[in-house]
Image (tube, rainbow, N blue to C red; front, side, top):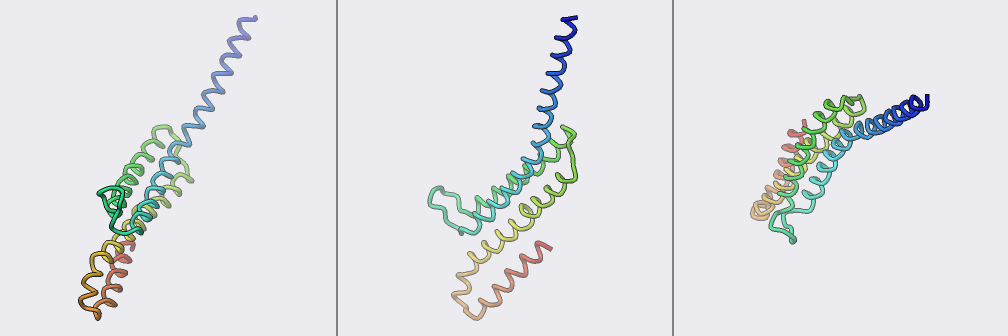
Length: 147
């Protein structure tokens, strides 16, 4: 009888440990999705700093591009991990969509605006009449990308 009680207690403890582990595993896809959004936001921050980076030989534009690439990898992993641990949810889908808009919509468009502004400012100094046209062209191309 005592042996039966200890086996039941061990089994109960194992169930609680498994349930806790399962709860931690279901958070993992959401964390990877949030990493996707953070990489997109970081890409926007790097792009806003301009072309030069005094610390390393890479420009802020290149770092911004690498952050978008890292966001792509995180976006690829979050769905696979969610399906693997069988923890897909409506919230996870909505969070993934939001992070995708940041990482693959806003960040590349903003990076394109900043790169074009940086490269076309020297042309605008040569021909001041074209500056207004260039500003409108840059915004139109970024808007077309997001659409």
